[in-house]
Length: 77
Image 1 (cartoon, rainbow, N blue to C red):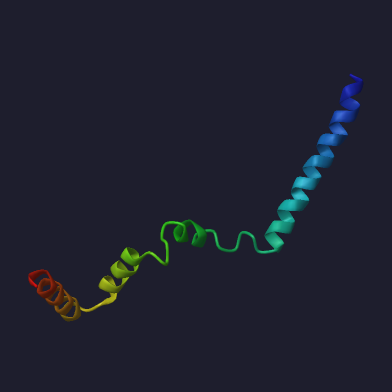
Image 2 (image 1 turned 90 degrees about the vertical axis):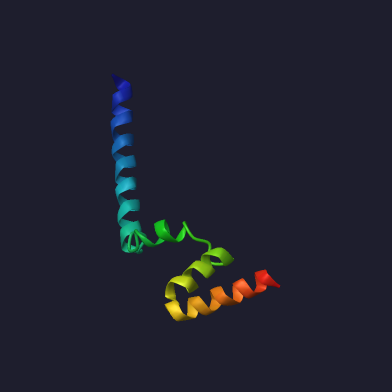
């Protein structure tokens, strides 16, 4: 029973510290962007295959057709 007289105040202090840390994190902006890091971890910006996919998706059909023709010429040579 005497252990409870020590453990309960210690637990209350620990909970108070955890709440203070939580409010510090919220006020410092730790939870402002919840989706950005989750999506950015999936892609490496310096990956040439990823950049080629982005360029192909952004390019027009006529431009991509020209690139395919150039690639076909390189294969024939």
